[in-house]
Length: 220
Image 1: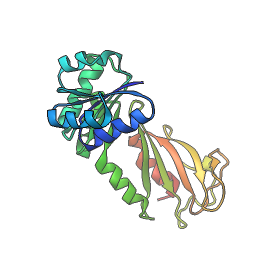
Image 2: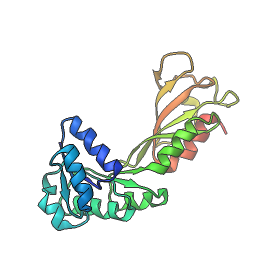
Image 3: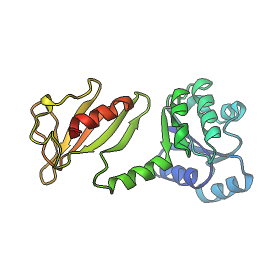
Image 4: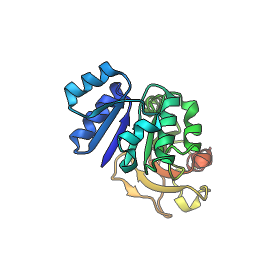
């Protein structure tokens, strides 16, 4: 794959290094000349000095043939603009943007960014995983399909303990995928699957149905 990374800070540097190690063709775009020189000294001729938000720069580096475009500068606005130019002017099939302010995520998605990665949300979700009473954890976002992969834990006091999946008032748009018991092997979720206390349920759902799904599985 030909992958373009915008932003030569720590995130961009280590991302580029990891992608190169996996055998991809990668070009890193960085405005700062000194930083670009350091990256070139360490990784080879993979850093292009330029502004990743400018169409002229993206045309010069062959963005039209890129399979993926990743913007990870420290500025949300720059990341959004760069992804939009790549997607709508150069028809890059997959764009990924770093987002420092979680409040900007809906805007990014509305304006066509395929995947939005919020470092704040990632940290919060890791914290939530350590809180036993937290009802729902986001595992992954399928940004291009408007779906979330989530995990919901069934507490001992839940009214759904001992009930089959077919008895639950699940949202029509949501689908249970996997049930992970505390001491047994994971199993695919079917209509006849019986929920037990401590089960972790992996589900696919639109964001707007999360609350209804949580209520249906936890019985509260």
